[in-house]
Image (cartoon, rainbow, N blue to C red; front, side, top):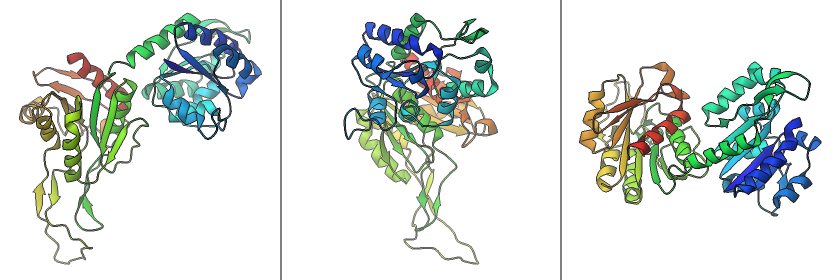
Length: 392
């Protein structure tokens, strides 16, 4: 496995050399990124000699001329471990600041991340630092907490870097969990569709695409091969997924049916318009004081047709409902031939459209169900995929 080890400017930086060595002994290839501050404690020469790999600091360093290292390293890594992680580095990563190789690489990666903080105990307990840690956890970043003891400044408290064996064990667990869907090909629909009324107007809905993007990111993190057929959504889709852009339900239907036979799982997260305008105006409709009438025709049922196109696939639908009546989802499962439906209650403003959080009630064909609770959409997406995998 390829591991990028990030080292920031803590007095504990010297322990990163032992960590790199132990990760290599465990059979991993280790490449190191230092922050500018880390160079006050350790050097690039140390890690290059120890690992036999380049050690990077500046965003614009290119060990291979013409290749952007922060992109290559993010793609090639199986996991990123930041140890030690200072308050400064944690806060920067949480806020999306990319001012060195390590923080820029973190903006690119879709791979599992483990952070091991090390700092003064009061800094660790600072509200801003704790808020950043909570935010990163909501995005799927794993943390191994610092231990309690005497720190370099002479104070006593929780701030010492976790032990090297503990970090290695946490890294191994991170890598193991990231293989849960290894070899599984996952097809995801995401975002809204837009059904044209004329050349400038269309019928659509309030879907942001955040949940579809979260499912794609979680599937990648768990080792799946991911393709997303996406309507015109706001939420960015993760690096590493193959993206097929579409606009209308008919376009999404055609793409999904052509792809469906090649996939093991098909997850319909998209909020597909139920109807399209039968005869959209090729130009621009002019204002009519008497009003207008639109003739609407039903769109195809994409997820049901996908299930028929590939009877061997595990097919999961999504249902945005204003209530938690399980009989509605159960009827859809039976009619569409699905493995399960993930239902979310759109009447709850905390988990409604454009929210960063969600709560799913995952209902299976056998009538059983399980509830995710309210979490970030990425956490809910990871929970969803793990639950599906456990049922197979």
